[in-house]
Length: 283
Ligand SMILES: [Zn+2]
Image (cartoon, rainbow, N blue to C red; front, top):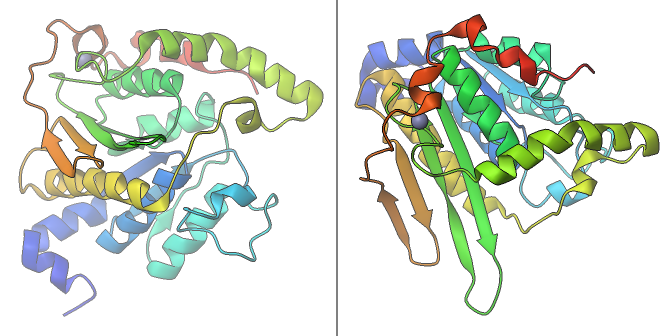
């Protein structure tokens, strides 16, 4: 018996071996990504690649399972915190951290050569880039999102969208705001210039909504469970799982995606000819 015994009782030795062989890239090492790193390490994934260029902020300490009170904030790279946690859980896991923005050659390489990709970002533009990139390189893409709308009757929850076979993605399942995505992509270069000039942390320029550990944990757990079932061959992942916390519901979407989706079909498997390098910004 070894540390994976209780896993193997669920999905077998073959399943555990497949997890061990998997290279998984996690884009965003924040509220969602830190949970995903932790759970992939406990599952026994062989290689974990967190991507994030930011440092810890004091307001992250309410929800990052990678961070502790005595970690310098700022002064701690989020990817270093992921690496520390993963290695304390299981030092045999390979950690390949990428301290760079999503739209960099280094991050793109870590995504294109991964077996699975998690998107744990709070930015529609980044979601659109990852949707196209993962389709072009046929990488299964798990996109995680949470939402909290405070008020007298608050609305809170999130969703997991899995795109893997060319039959559904964020765009054709209508789970992305394309206007906001285009706005994000058009403005990120300008925002970076502002940061370079004034030394402002990029995140401070964006609006900050509420974010809490337990809701992030629900969404991360739903996403990692779909990943686990897919990798081990228990069943195919569900395309879309929606958590409506205020109603106490997790629902699987049964709507059919819009047909002839450019992101599912037009660029799928095109690799370099898809031209995704156009998204890379010179650092
Ligand atoms: Zn699609």
